Length: 300
Image (cartoon, rainbow, N blue to C red):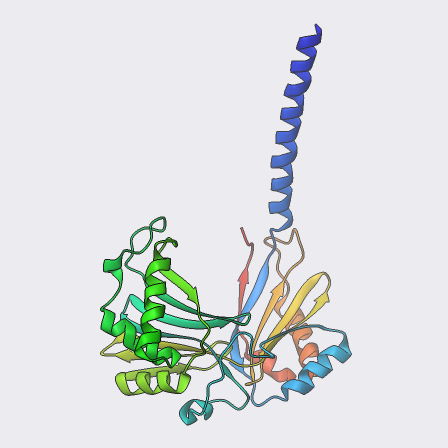
């Protein structure tokens, strides 16, 4: 084999080895991530001392991850008695929608200290093309709703509408978003939705939201936030987690160890772990028997 043949052979082997390592590593990653899991429904435990539960979790050495303990991801609701009466603890409004029709609406939300105004038209056909001016609703409706949601006069609403239209040329898909320096006028929005709807449904639980309907079609939507936490521990390399809200709702799940695809844990065994966790947290252990679990043999 001459010098040039050796070089070509070496380069070829490097390519083959690289391909083997790439696909072999990818296969190993998929295989190592192939794990079974259990997920429960959410149930109401009754009134809980949320602060005490968190303190007990810390004392037991459990991992604790909290959600919404400040206002960086939501708006203060103001004085809306009908809504406040539904909650036993503090709550925020994370986002609201007001619909022009069932597929076209304005949304205001807050995430990581940024307030955003969005227009969404789910009838838009292409993810690779921007919204066309003809896909926006009547201008009068847009101005009225932007003013209502953000507490603005007509001139300021016109500025934001113009910014939405201009930004639509730069964003693809069925929505366009801009950042705004305003806050949500939730009392005004809620009054409009309450007065203009023919029906509404409030859904308490681990995800608190409210849907407003007019003649059977969605008129508006509100998502609420309450303090929540995920409390986790490891047992035989499996992660047992309790999602709990300050309103007394809870949901349970188990992420099994790697390479566990198809394997199961005896029901009495995993319920016993959760009963022990509940007791350590100051929650009623007998409530564990009320959860219904769904088993997933694999994530792939």
